[in-house]
Length: 248
Image (cartoon, rainbow, N blue to C red; front, side, top):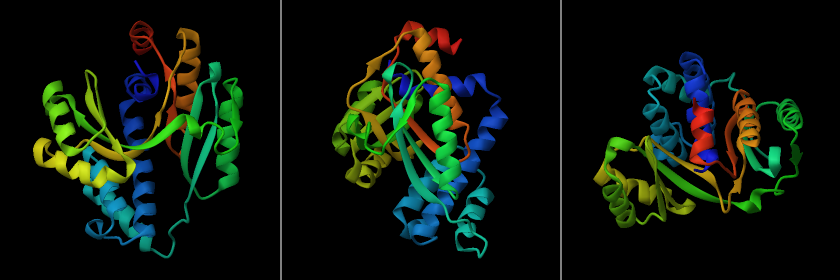
């Protein structure tokens, strides 16, 4: 089991749901504001904003919150957020990519560096681990959207490259540049997706034991808890047995 795709489920089960949801809404709002500021504030005219809004709705973010985030992009007091990517190695040599939206690059860099250092890892230069990942589109459907065969057939017909199914969801992978076309074709067959976004997919994974997995998950949780951090990706792999222990 690829640990990088499962850690948020573990963190959510162990954390307080209200606090997790509040932080998720805050990060989605920031992403909506940035997307609206980079293009038109109308989702129908801004592909990036349209995807973010769709993801926000899938996470049950209230419409008022979504509209407030869009309006903030055109307000005189709107913050100037900058997209920053950090790369480094975590416990056990696990490669980690951190995506952030920040209005203070120095603060964010300091926080990210501290998280790596405390975990026994090390923050590297941009590109130090990026070559181990591929930038792809990920379209996620809940497990009740269809059985594995139905999802696979729909994905193939839509032009996707791969499908990974678990007890909780179906993750459909496509080329980064095909996100819009593939997600549109899937929606015609399966309905609205739970999330549609660009992600960093590991080209290979590094197996880790229970101790290292716990350390990596702690690093990811620390990073994910930072308000500036939007997404964290890592290339570690954990056995089903170890993942079950960590999920308990």
